[in-house]
Length: 299
Image (cartoon, rainbow, N blue to C red; front, side):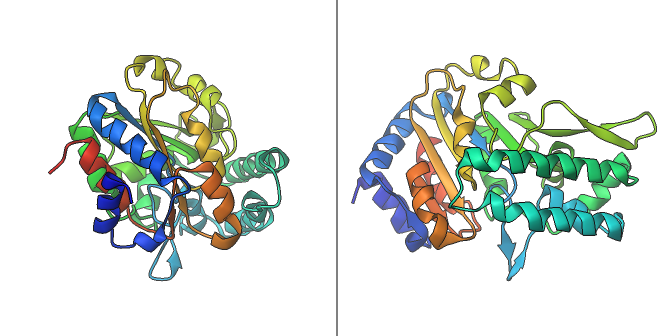
């Protein structure tokens, strides 16, 4: 077994949950990333079920959209319509027999119908804090520490999400993790002068168009400003997340880490073909933090 990778696996509590198609390549990527240090690194991460937990104590945790669905501030009619849309479209999102191209039209419909449904019911900006406070959204164990370490070493973090950016930012604040090194690219709510939701602004971001075009529309000079940071730790829980690295200037050591949370047997092969490292039902950031121990020169 390779040296740095072997050390990480020995220190990791669930080595059986780690699937790596090409260990020698991953070893080389970690070595190069560690040699270059934090000054050459950036992180690009998904949010829902990546930074946040998929489940805890047998109960599924909330996502950004899930916070809306579970909140007592939203009507039962809204919740029913939202659940109907989830039941209709989520099986398509995770269907391993369909190509991404086949899924995209359905994902567009899902998001458009979800946003239209949300604007049909009274929703005020002032409700965001209370909704997040009373939700079941939780960071993965070690996520707060990971974000703190990256901030201390001044490593840029892009949180690239197909969720709701306004809710996502409120969650980051809840866990004291919205640091100065963090940029959010997501769907943004639009409110009128009275603070009532009237729609969404900017380009629609869904799980299969998280790419350079979406980033440039939100943060036009982001990758140009980070042209000296060609090494990337990419974290995601969907096959569409691997495209988040598009646009990185002069990419060097790029390590793509996928959290496989559900439909594990059906999706494992496609995940291993897309991500360098696959973590099976791991609700922590322990493995990533072990990599960062080497890259950030942490004790």
